Image (cartoon, rainbow, N blue to C red):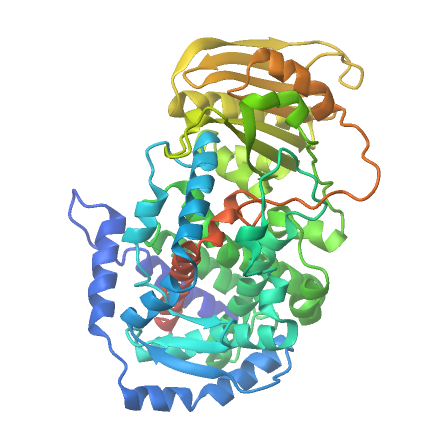
Length: 535
């Protein structure tokens, strides 16, 4: 099929696909689409004969995935067809319940404090209510098994196998558990600190984007094979697939009514990971796209969102926060610490700013870290709330203008999540930024949870504190803005949640990872359905 005809037919199919769901006037798009999806998938079953025939095609599909990716095939892959009860049990057995609850409590309170989750949002309830009905299939590197699901239509199963067998090949060549930094002892070994000192804290959080992005490339190459096309043959197929997937994001309903943080974070490994791999594919071919990220993984969401930064090797310097224990005294104890990456900044910019803030602010991110401490007066048998926490957020930006705009976005969002009891006092200082002895821009206000200070300093540095007394903030400025030089190697950051970049920390809960897989599967299915209509 010619490139022009292929693109024309695909465009018509995608436009038709964007109106797949007919809904009642008082029913949300997400609810209507979910009903259609659930009813359809509950009726589909793959019997034993179908499964046997399907698994007989594994060798051919794996050979394609190996040739397409360049990953050598080392051994056969275990495989199993399972139903919903087995899938639910598989994920529920993957993590201890108490560890799971502790992680959720810690992450939820910090995310709510920063405004990344609504104050009345219950993450635990959300994860309990949402199941893996859109999950297409999965490869588990722990037992080296590819699981296919018996409620998925047969005509989609082989496409799913191409994706999941790519994971098996990645695992055989690079050991996925090791690559992602998975450690079964990690939850018990980690301890909160009043410091952020890690030189490489963001890297592990985005390796999932490499893994999923590569699998998506192979998946769509496999899908395009009957057309005689591939993502890298110069036929325009790459742009066609990108357009189809981009339009399919709006049809994904697993997180349709969820907070932006959950939606954007769940999609990140599939959307941004796929786009990251495509940019590497265009720039350096399959060697750069498939082999290079394992010897030099992207450092943080910044390098995935901006692949040119990864390809140029121009790393963003890690923002460090020294040990604050001596300045905070006995009124506080460590609760959480880590990095605030570009994805965190992007979510804030989109949620509380204007459309252009993604480009004028989030893309100007140049590093960020935070420390959250809890009041020692907080009773251990009481649930943790935002009122029990105080936070320090230190970030760098490429321009003072971007730093100031981020401060304004943060300030404007405060009134949406906590009662302001004393209106902000905003001051600007006209002086040479490099020599200015004070903040270039500052805002101070009071909320029901205590004082809030936002200050833009020289070198496009933004310092934000919440719920700390003014005299404490005064003591913190010097170590935060002009930290002492520490002799010897930097201590390794130990975050109680495993992953350091705040938004990507959601993947530490296996149920969220399960739901994210559902999002990826649903997006791929919508895109594939659109393309099938061109046949």
